[in-house]
Amino acid sequence: MADRWVLAVAEDGGVEVAPLGLDGLPAGPVRREADPAQAVRSRPDVARWVWRSTAEVAPRLLAAGVRVERCYDVEAAETLLLGHEGRYGEPRSAAAALARLHRGPVPPDPPQRSAEPGAQSPLFEPQAVHLPLDDLLAVYAEQQRRHDRSAHPERMRLLTAAESAGMLVAAEMNRAGLPWRADVHREVLHSLLGERYAGGGEPRRLAELAEEVSAAFGRRVRPDLPADVVKAFAQAGIRVGSTRRWEIESVDHPAVKPLIEYKKLYRIWVAHGWSWLQDWVRDGRFRPEFLAGGTVTGRWVTNGGGGLQIPKVIRRAVVADPGWRLVVADADQMEPRVLAAISRDPGLMEVAGRESDLYQSVSDRAFSGDRAQAKLAVLGAVYGQTSGDGLKNLAALRRRFPRAVAYVDDAARAGEEGRLVRTWLGRTCPPAAGAADGAEEAGMPQDAPSDPSDRAQEWVPGYASTNARARGRFARNFVVQGSAADWALLLLAALRQALADKAAELVFFQHDEVIVHCPREEADTVAAAIREAAELAGRLTFGRTPVRFPFTTAVVECYADAK
DNA sequence: AGTTTCGGCGCC
DNA sequence: AAAGGGCGCCGAAACT
Image 1 (cartoon, rainbow, N blue to C red):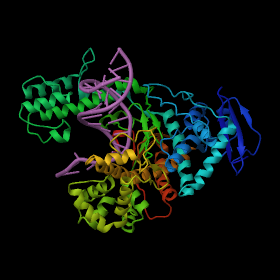
Image 2: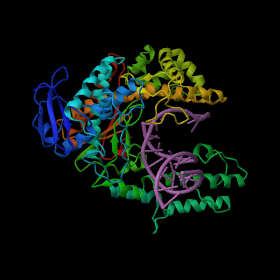
Image 3: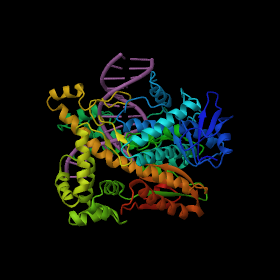
Image 4: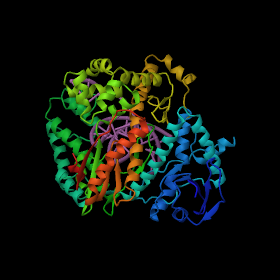
C-alpha cells in the first residue's frame, strides 16, 4: 500500500483514486468508487490523501464516520505558494493552477459563500470546479517543484502540511460544534438586559438606561446613534470627536455612566442576544463555521455567529455534556515566546526558556520589576507603537534584547519599502497589506514596490508616508502574529493525532486557546496531551531552541469558570 | 429597494 | 497610559 493516494471528486459525487509513487506519479491503476467515504474506509493504511479541497471532502467523510490520518489540500497549497511567490492576487483554485500550467485563460475564483444562519455544511461548495484525477496530479506535481524552489523548502512543505491539517481540524470542529446551553444563555440575557417587550424593541434595562441618558441631557437622546450623542454633548458645552468609550469615559457629565453601560449591554443584545441564539444554536451546539487560514497572517476566522468573539459573560452558556468536561487551554505569553524563537535573541530566548511569567522575567531584566511596563513595551514593539510611554520603554527593550527588536524593525522596514515579509514557515504577507487606500483588496493585482500608481501618491504631502507607515506596522506585526499562527497549526495537528483514539473532541480554537470536550475520566490525559503537543509544535516549527510553550489549563464544566 | 460603508465594540 | 496589529458583527448611514 502506497503512502500517499490521490482522490479526485467527480461531478456526480463519485471519486477516482490512485496510489502515488515517490515521484508523485500514479503507482498503480486508477480506481473508481461511489463516494469518498467508501474510498477512504477501504484503504485504512494510507498515510496521506491528496485532494483538491478538504472543505469539500472532509464533511462527507465525517458524515460517514470515516477518519483520515493526514491530507494534502491542493487549493490551500496553491494559496500559500502564490503568496510565497509574491503573486497574491491571482486566482487560487485548482482549476486556475491548471490553467496557469497549460498557459491557458485563468478562470477567476468563484465568489465566496456568505454565512447563512443555521445552515448545514453543504455537501458541495457551490460552483466548485472538479478536476479530473490526471489534472489534479499535474497541479500537485508542479506544486512539489514550487515547494522545492521556495526560500526554505522543508519549512514550506511543513507549512502546507500544517495548513492541510488545519483544514481537517476545522472540518471536524464544524461538525462537532461547541456545547451550548440555550437555557443558560437566556438566563444570562434576562439578568443583564431584563424582560423583552412585545414587538421586538429594546429590552427593559436598555430602555431604562436610554431614559437615564435622555434625562441627563435634558432632552430625548438615542444612545445608539453616535451623531445624536455627539450633538447632545456639544449642546452641553462638551466637544467630543466620537462616542468611543475611551474618549468619553473621562468626560465629566452625568450622561456618561448610563451611556457606557448602555453601549456595553446594547452590544450583548445585538451581537449575542435572543436572535443570535435563534440563528446559531441548534441541538445544544453553537456551530460557527471555522475557516482555517482565513486571514493573511494565517489566523483562523469564523464565518457566522462571531465564533471568535464570544463575550466573557456569554461563556456561561458553554457547558459540557453530563459526565463530560471542557479542557480549556490557553498559551501563556505566546507572542513574545514566538518572537524569541524567530529572532533567536539570546536574552529573550533565555527568559522564554522558562515556564514562568515571561513579562515578569523581562521586567526583572529591563524594567526594574515593573511587569506592566514590560508587557506594554513588548506589545508595543510587536504592534509598532508610535507614541507615548511605549517609545521610552522600547529603548530599554532594545538594549536588553537587541536581536528581537531588530527582527521586528527589519520587518517593518521591509513592509514600508514594499518588500515581501514572511512568517517562520513561509506564509507571506501581501506587499500592500496594511495600506489605508484599499489597494490591498483580495483579487486585485498587487502594486509592485515601484508601481507608478504607488509613487504617484508621494506627490500628495503626508499621504505616502502615512501609507508606508501603516504597511510597516502591518509587516512588523505579521511576522510575529503569523509565526504564532504557524506554531498554533502544528499544535492543532499534533493534538488531533493525540486525541485520535479517544472519545475527546476538539470543539474550539481561538488563536492561542483550545477547548477539548471529553469524558471526565479523560480530562487529565487530554490536558497532558495539550502540553506535549505544544512543545512538539515548538520543536517542529522553530527547530532546536530553548523556548518553551507553556499552557494554562483548566478542567471545567463551564467555559466561564476557566479563568 | 437593495447594497456597501461606517461607527462602535466584542475577542485575541 | 494611550489609542499600534488581526478579525466579525450589527444597525444606521450613505451610496447606487
